Image (tube, rainbow, N blue to C red; front, side, top):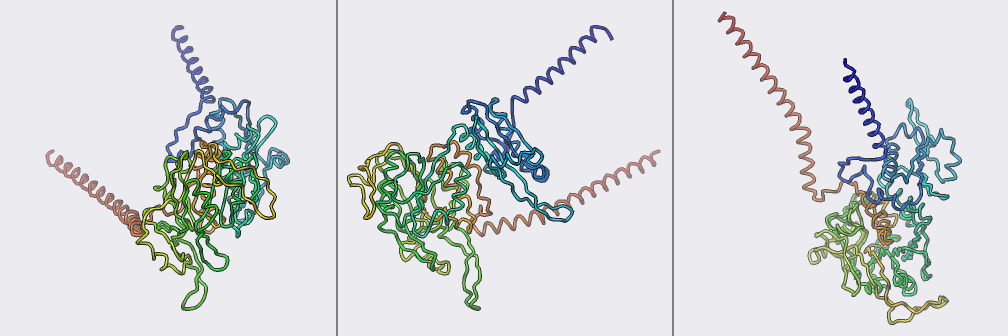
Length: 544
């Protein structure tokens, strides 16, 4: 080998090594992943990729996870991948550490951060036992920290993480106040799941006392229910909107009582409905029913035996909102994930100067109304359809309104109540830029969702709160995350049964027959080729 050729080979080898080194360095700085899933479940959103623009100093993400979980489950690996995606897109602003919660010796530190142990069932050699494990994320920025105490549910983790990072950087979280407007409900007893969802979303939640002034630190109000609210209770809400406040209303036109029997009565002279009418929202004292409804277990008395039995009943008063009938443009519903409404009323939006209004969710076209008597007991099923023919159509359920609102108390004095000493200011009669969302059902956010498996309802409320507080970009993460996974995509029973039959026919009939036919054809062809080859051999022997 010549010296020149030897030198060229050495130079080429060095160049190859240099390219490999530079590629390795570049791969640590640049991150690329091709995600072909329908909802991009393995990619972080644009808002999360651009968080580095909001982080002046370096931020640390520490994932504490027990080694047993890391070994037995796949979620910890996916969570680590998610955190690495944040770091790779952060231009060096986010650092990630993954620590074995058991081997790190930081149990006391995790307790200080607010990461609790969780019980985990272990099966080894046919023996069941329970182990204490950890899976939590700590976000540290400067001298403060925020914690995701239970990092496990992948569907909502990006939303939680992005919101937590923002909270750690800003040093404060949003304040949300809840006004419960029904006499038979309390925030502590009937809204546990919603309270948990709002807390996990990073809100500081306070219960609002009816008639009390709304604090200056409040970003969003939730008004849930309206049967007991009067003008005195609503004056602070109206004036909060006049200051540019954001309010979510979950209200009803018909009051349904289930404590002692099941009966309903119209709220024909309700203060909250009058207030909303001023804002261009008209909720009728009627019930809307829909063919696209929930099937619920209901306890009935068997006529033959007299015993109480559970039966599955299609209940059109509990309607399921179809994705085809929600707004694709509004941030709250642009990536709709499911919404079930209980005893809803028809909602229409009137034109009001200075306001932009949109119905963002409707019934299907096979809905109808109940305008009198209001039969709601599942044992009165025949009565549900008495007005179906004359009222068949499509009705609004959720409205979004923004702009400069007129006050409900315009040209009126501030209301008074005997025994109360509130010193109201004179009413402001026109608002700064404000927003409201109105859902024509008061019970859909209560813990009834446990009964109907409608957990995504509370996520809808949380998404509305985020949009109302101007975090529209966060809504794009949250509404993508939650999916109605129940097997109810096909609503027509005949079509559903036909598809089930077709599935059995293909999987149990056509596929096995196809395999058998392929084997027979292949056998015949081989036999034919063998016969032809044998014929050629005989012909050659005769010829020779």
